[in-house]
Image (cartoon, rainbow, N blue to C red):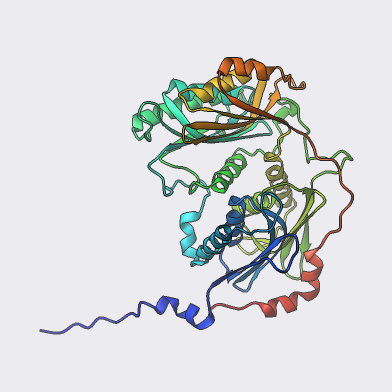
Length: 477
């Protein structure tokens, strides 16, 4: 009988490069270098989408990124973030610091490991995939549409556990997590799911108008149900999915015909009180084959996440970047190429990137009245709240719905349907209608203008010292 010898594979062979060259990802949290912020430094083997994953970790912790310098070339990723907590202070909680180090450290895997985290129109299950059923909805927005969706779900005996909805340029995108009204379990019956999709699609398509050929344009009215859609359960993953849904319905284009069914809001790039607009420009760095994207706008939380998310989902790779915010304004500079290695070469491509970035900046900005409501969880609560808002002449332009234990935590941005100032007497009407409820009201207005601030341009540094940069990178073979 012939003996068969199989080759021996050392189980530590896969870790050999790390044992020779050191860890493939180093995360340093520095609280000594700067007086007013914490410096987070990341050195790692590079892979597509790594920058977005790192920004997602910081954004999930509600950290404010005031400055950032990014270099990712020659297979190596070097990044520096100046961050503060939600109270504007340094990071002192060791649990938060350890979480950042561990969470960013897990992003260092090989490029194939990122497949489970790709988000472009894909369905996959997170850790708690058995808890709820997810629904994605996109369509043409109209006054009262979110109320109609809430009422339809109540009629279908669905309990809304969590929901997030954005409205921009007459388009609506919504991700909702639902359960069976009686059992509070996921809905997995295919026939019932199909019925829910059909019913909600009918609600969304009620606004469809004939196109010039006389046919109904329904391609952008869409409902999808699945066990879980669009993320791993973190807030940034839901928001990334909302960005993708808005992009899919082309919210970067103005409503056709120049009319809108929603209350009038400023169109085009956002302006401050002195008329200063959000500006997005694209230049060329021909000697290195980059396109340079410059963004100049009012600063706000999650701004870097929104812009990096949009560029990544449009299949652009960010090689170098500089982020700076001061006195309420932000300046961002990205050196990018398309994933195929080419810079932006045509005028139409540049215009599309500019419009998509402007839309990404505008989507999250809501002006008007913000309502924060806390009430005991009960069936049909969301439907009742949105019905009262609609009956008082208000339309929801953004919504964040959550459940914490036995409490329902709802936040709405609302505007008057006719475009007038919101009549604050509706608060008493809502309290009478809803019974025991905690209601807080906040008026969202534009920030006052600030003096011209100094900028730091990574472009000059890159163009004048590109050779020095390239020699500092470590090539991983």
